[in-house]
Structures are given as structure tokens and as C-alpha cells.
Length: 381
Image (cartoon, rainbow, N blue to C red; front, side, top):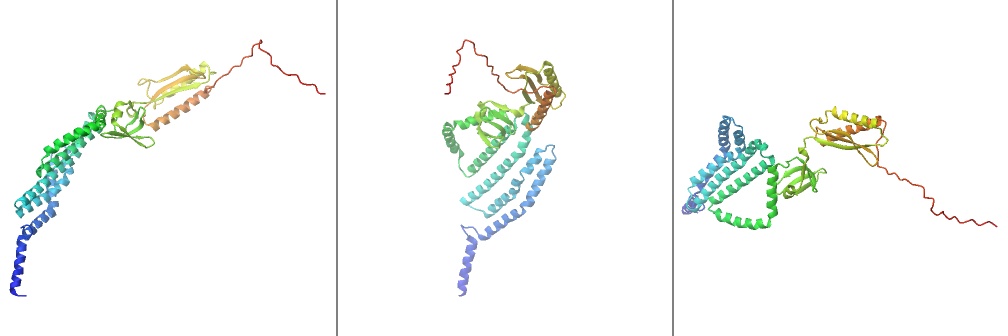
């Protein structure tokens, strides 16, 4: 190996170092990587300074929502130094032609992603702020609105990225419109259920957690109200998915909206019960209900304890009252105590409870009916 060979080799090294790959100098590329690495290392410090400044600005206002928004958009803010580092590194590289356009579009895309990512995360605190509108709009309807806003942010963000890369969204929207018409013709039930769900939420027929009874369909607790169907969990813990259109067109009883809970009984006593006994039983049951704070006062709702009817095998006493509690377990306990009291009152009155019975009367046969023939016995030899 002579001096000329070493010079040629060194010339090759210098050429590769200068031209690199695609005409990019390796030293310049290494410097760009160092710039990007520096911004990546310093991103925590820069983001901390930026987020701290925004938090101080938010705390200077009387609103709480801006503090929550700053906390929510903290992750996108931490990505800003990295995006800025990519921008500085690509500018340092001084790309030309198509490579320069691609590098600029990459930077624009990252900026758009950070912006729409922050908007998407900011919807969380906004949804909590909208909770004050639950008196006007139901909680489920607000959830629907927030879901629609999230979808809108994602779609607009995707359209923005496509526009950055020169993809026109007009033809895409037109094609989607034609496709939507075709789909709508075959998915009428889907849109019918969607509109029914909006009507259910608008009318506030029921809400999540309500105990409802859908006539001829299901009875249970509402878990979720979706765009197409509502999930109702029966009391045996089995979930039932009911289409919203069926809930909109069918009678729905919402037990959770009861003001009070009713007790409606017919107490049957024996026909041998005297008037004094009946009067004593009625007065004692009425006094128990009237003096018990578990029952609603008669001035607020209908309360009756009356001799109601003469049934087939009993004299029926109507007991009609309401309890303050709507909780099923507590209501059952109150019913149980009332049942004990009624049994005690009836037995102390000296009578008893009637049970279904049937009496059969046999009359003597008329005298002009034929006599029964009895054959004579043979005499023994």
C-alpha cells in the first residue's frame, strides 16, 4: 500500500461524508440529530415552563374550567418542544425540491395533530362544565353531544391532515354522500332507532340507573342509552338490548320517578265477623298507618282503610296507603310490619281470615220418584 492508495481512500471518505445519502452531508445530518435530541431532552423543562405559565394565567381568573382545561391539555403541550425540534432540524438540513416539501408537510401534520389532540382532550373539562345544564338537558343527552363533538374534532382533524398532503376532501365527501344515500336506504331501522334515542333523551323518559318496565318486553335497571339501543339489566342480572324505536313506541313505566310507593291490599275476614269486630279491625289498622311516620300522611295522598265488598267467601277490607321510601328492600320491610300488625289486630278482635270455599247443598228427593228395586234373597234348603 502506497501513499496514492491512502489518498484515494481518504478522498472516498471525504466524498461519502460530504454527499452522504441522497446528497445530504453526514455531518449535517448528525448535527440535525443532535438538535432534535437536544429538544427531546429539554422538552420536559420547556413544557414545564409553558404549562406553568398557562396555569398561572388560569389561576388569575375566577373560573375553574380554564384550570381543568390546562391540566387536560398538558400531554399535547409536552409534545410541542419535540415538534419544534423537528422543525429546526429540518430547516437546518436545508432540503430542496420534493424532500423539502415532504419535510414541511411532516411538520405541518405534527402541528395539526397536536392542535386537534389538545382540542379533543379539552372536551373532557367542557363536558363537566355542561353538567350544570342537566336541569335543562338530561345527563345522557349531554353525553351524546360530547360524543358527537369528539367525532367532529376527529373528522376535521383528519380532513386537515389530508389537505396538508394535497388530498382534496371534496370528492371524498361527495363519494361519501352517495354511499350514505345507498346505506340509508338499507339502514332505515338504524336511523329510526337513532332518532328515537334522541326523542327519549329529549323527553327525559328515563335516565341511566332508572328502574323501568317496558310493557311486554322487559323490566329492570337502565345501564346505557346508546345511539341504536338501550341496555336494560334485569333483576336476575341478565342484560337485555332493546332497540330505541321499541322504547319510543311502547308504554314505559318509570318506577324511579315515583313520588311515593303504594301498598294495595284486600284483607278478607270470615263472614262470621260481627259489625263491632269489623269496626274495631278497621279503626286499629287506620290508626297504625296514621301514627306511623313510615307512611305518607293522608293529606298528601290517598289513604283508605275501608270495608270494601262482600266477596264470595269473605268480607274484604281495603288497605290503600303509600310509603315515603321508594327503595324496594325498605318497602318490603314496611309491608312486612304492616302485615304483622294486621294479623295481630284480626286475632285480637276474636275473628279470623277467610279462605276460598264452596258450599254444596243436597236436598231430599221428591216422593213421587220410583223406589229402588231390591231382589229377594233365596231361602236356604
